[in-house]
Image (cartoon, rainbow, N blue to C red):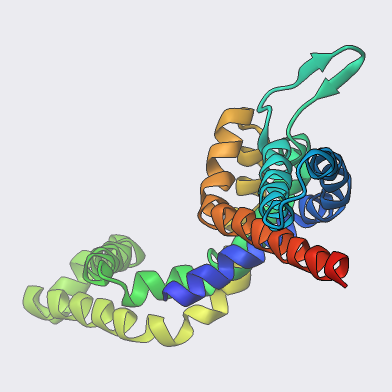
Length: 243
């Protein structure tokens, strides 16, 4: 289950954050160049062998950290000179909401999953008790004005047993025929539209709070990987200079 959840989170981020991934890839060049200039200045005044891998690690960490910050910050639009600045992810709230709603409804909140949870989940007994009660009421309404005649011909006990039998049959049959209602249920609930509209209407703070926590767990790993790659480049530089 944990593996499936992790896989799902990755899928959501891959589809919702495709443009952000592209930004991280491109920012590695621009930010890396700027921080690399600082590293070059340090190397000009002190060319100890440890400087290159150490600075490479720092540059890699700062590059990825800064890229992630720009994706989610600032939360609300800020004016700087003639530019309006806002986190890249938050600027795309409308587009991201559409993708998020689609992925969630395809992978988690689809009709089959909801009915499986109702029919086999921990509260299934509550559902079947409710279904039984409604089935009995429905039978009563269906008979309507013929109820006195039915009781007179069958007897009160037999009439009650009949209602119980109908309710029991419905509870037995519904798991095997419920799939016939999937299409109608999907159209009637329109869960994807509900999620999309609600997410598009969230404030930037709430919108960020819905999506960012799911990805925060891996941010540290991404930053560390940037540092390790930068350090490896530093060792390669040492190898080049020594030869």
